[in-house]
Figure 1 (cartoon, rainbow, N blue to C red):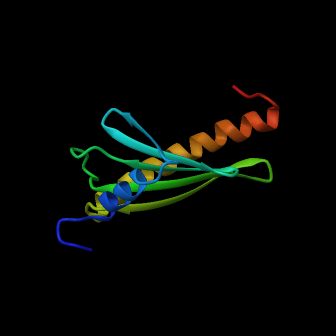
Figure 2: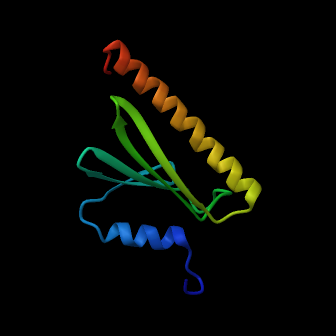
Length: 111
């Protein structure tokens, strides 16, 4: 990797070259998303003042046996302790999403 470059920035630049990627901003965070077939992939980038910056979290959302499945990959440019905390936050969010979505799917409710 060239000096001054990092994985998150390289991924972001590559995504911006893909016309199928939609970019949104929320509270300084950048979230790029792309739908391919029955899968939705998101790449989440924290703001430059976040303690885990530079990082990228890639999540692939799909359905397995009718239930939400989330595959998560993280590239974190901070210390191990900060990265571990960063990952725990996404694990918590993923669990909440799965509980909400899969619970609704089982009960027949879709909001």
